[in-house]
Image (cartoon, rainbow, N blue to C red; front, side, top):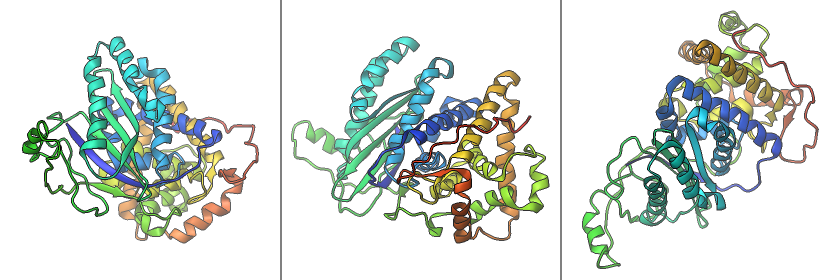
Length: 404
C-alpha cells in the first residue's frame, strides 16, 4: 500500500452556503465525469490521492483556496453528485465527516454486494488506514474525516483528515490502492511537516522489530527518520498573495481570455460569443481535468477560476459559475452521443494555454488582476458568505457547448 501525500491546512470555521454547495456539486460532478470519460477510474482515483490536485480541485470549485474546509466540501460535493449515478459511472463515494465516516462500513458492504466485491476486505482497509494515520503516526493529528472512494472493480482511494488543536492545523492524508504491498511495512511515501521533534512511525519499513516487541511489550518504541515526500503546507494567511501563485501560468490563462491579439486564435477552439470571464474559468477547469501533476504545485492559482466564498481572492462570480457549468454539462451530454468528440475541446483548450505560457514574455501583474476581478465582481453577480443577501438572478445564461 502506498500513500501518495500529506497536506497541512489552516483550520477555518463557517459553512458552505447552499448557493455555493449546489454549484460545487454540479461542477465537481462534471469534472469527475470528464476525467472518467477521458482517462478512466484509475486515473481519477490517482488524482484524488494527490494532495496538490485535490487542493486545486477545491479552489477551482470556489472554496477557500487553502482552508481545511476544502476537504469536507469537495468530498461532500462529489458524494452528492456522483453517487446517484454510481451504477452508470462505476464509482462510489463513501464516508465523510463525523457521523458520516461511521457509516463507511455499511456503505462499503452494500457496494460489495452490488458489485461482487470482497466487502470484508474493503471494510478492513477502511478501518486499518484510519488506525494507521490516527495511531501509528504520532504527529498529533486525530482523524475526524474519513472518505473511501471505490471503483466497481475494487480499486480505491482514501482521503481522510486529522485535527491538531494546538497547532491550529488540519492534516489531510491521501491513499491509493494502486501499489499494494503491506499495511504495516512502509505503506507511506513518508510524512513531513512543521518540525515536532522525533515522530514515532510504527509502520516504517525498519519498524518490524518494534512491531514484534509491541506484541509482548506495549511500551517499546521505534526510533526512525521519516523520508522526504511531496508535502503541501498551506500558509496561515487567508488572503491570496502573489507569492502563492505561479504568475506566468496565471498570465497564460488571462492572456487566452483577454488579450486581443490571441482572440482570433482562441476562436478556432471556442465559440465566438463565449465571454472571456467564462473562458478564463473553463481554461482552469480544463487544466484540472487534463493537467499533469507538476501543474498543481500552486493550488492558489486555481482560486482565480471562481474566487472563494469568503471573498479571497475575490467574490464567487455566480454568472461565470453558472455559464461554466452549463458549457461543461452540455458538452458531456453531447459526448454520450458522439463518443467523446465534443469533450476534446477541453483538451485542446488545456494544450493551447500551455502553448501561450511558453510564448508569454511577461508574468501576470498580480495586483492588477486582483483589482480587475474585484471591479467586475458586481457585474458578474459576485457573492460571498458575508452579508450578501442579494437574490440570485432568476434567468440562467443560455447553456451552450464550446463546440456548437
